View 1 (cartoon, helix red, strand yellow):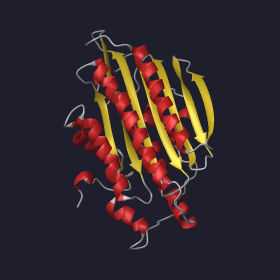
View 2 (view 1 turned 120 degrees about the vertical axis):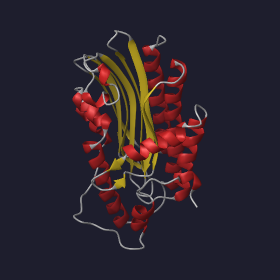
View 3 (view 1 turned 180 degrees about the vertical axis):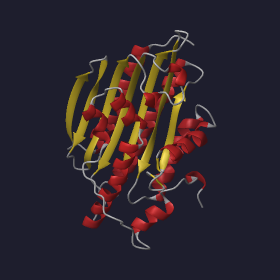
Length: 305
């Protein structure tokens, strides 16, 4: 496999982090930022940029990490068991936005780069990442836009990517104990290596670029819609599902905790408020029922009738 320039990945991922933050600050000039640069005892560190109490964003974060370790944790070995016990370097940008307004979706994106030495002592590397959208009061045109942009991005690299990565996203962001998807999906990919190092990293960069552009287009379109106390309460109820997924199923959370990562940065993705209302069910014919009936399942959004 060709030589890779890990420091180049570092610089390009930092640029991706800064680009997302620029979109946020252009959309919510009142948001408060906390910058936290940290180091990890085993090697590496990161730059956490946490946000709260904006006019439109309740809580969010755009994190960068670049860590090294003596052996890959179990969460990173699902598709590469031959790397068990291998030293590694892992780099990534992770983004979560929890808006105030329940008419604006929550959104998540990440890109990640791994390199490790295989059993022959040769370096191997790959990327993963994707983005997904979690609306509370979904608007079909937003969902279609989200998926159309994802397909346009994927088609520039491989005509099969969108269908494959959409299916992976629908399967990954699924809560089996609730029998529902976390939201309306997007794209998700793991263990990916393209024809060249440059093309592979370029794809990761485009993922974060398209995410920022598309999400804040939706964000700005919906952020001034009036909402009721009941709609805010429903948002908090649905945020409970978001918390369940991140704590129980999310591989990124597991990787961070298993590799001795920084807990505050790992749990940045958790919503600012959430509730669990016992045995709650939506009223028939309501907007809340519409979410459950039409959006919390895999759908071919680009060919919907």
